[in-house]
Length: 125
Image 1 (cartoon, rainbow, N blue to C red):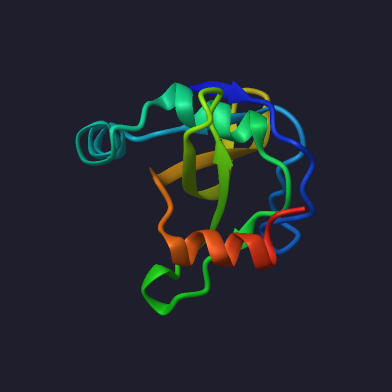
Image 2: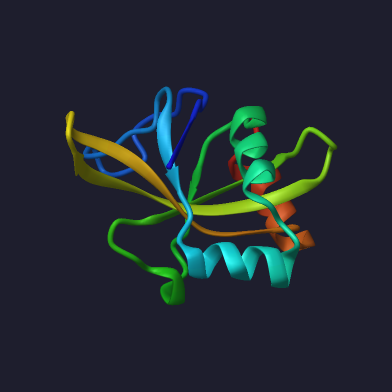
């Protein structure tokens, strides 16, 4: 698991798990395979999007995307200016140092026009 540095964001998990500083990034083998085969997105590109991110994360409130903990998303660019929509959950996990927040990637792909318009209205600074 790799730690990523993320810009400060107000609490994104109902006061329970917030992203503010280096947090571990987790991508399951199944998701990693889907990202590579279906979307041609690498783990490095996802890390770059988090590092280049500015704005607020948006909670996915669509009925079919309801999860516990909640799903959040944002749009950012890789270092090569490739725009990606990143969907993730912030999960509390136990490790040898105690409890910490971990970012579990659900998906990453080029955004469609509807995603970009929503991001422009609600997420982008």
